[in-house]
Length: 139
Image (tube, rainbow, N blue to C red; front, side, top):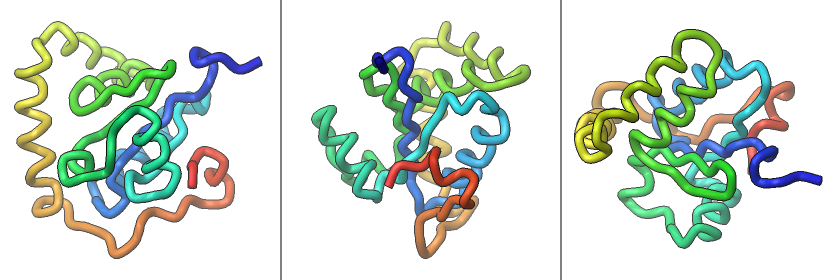
């Protein structure tokens, strides 16, 4: 029987953003246990998951990394840090930033999020996973 604690966490990301798609690749490379699944915010699965938590895909949602884990939704810097502490290697050490108050962490997050298209560009379409990674992407 699957419980919220044993289900993979779902990372919702802007599928049109090069930085976000690269971040998904980064997570996959450091998540050999397959702890995370992925869905673009623009996808049907992404919209449905957001709706199940009372959120919609609007302008603010698209510049927000979201993680649904254990039946709870986390966004912005909290989502990024929850991901980092589950990754292989020294990335777990980023969890120390949970000691920084969320409003301060989110200022840095927002600074990067507002500039990500300008710095890293966009795609014309959402990422299409390779056949071996397809099971980790919700559609």
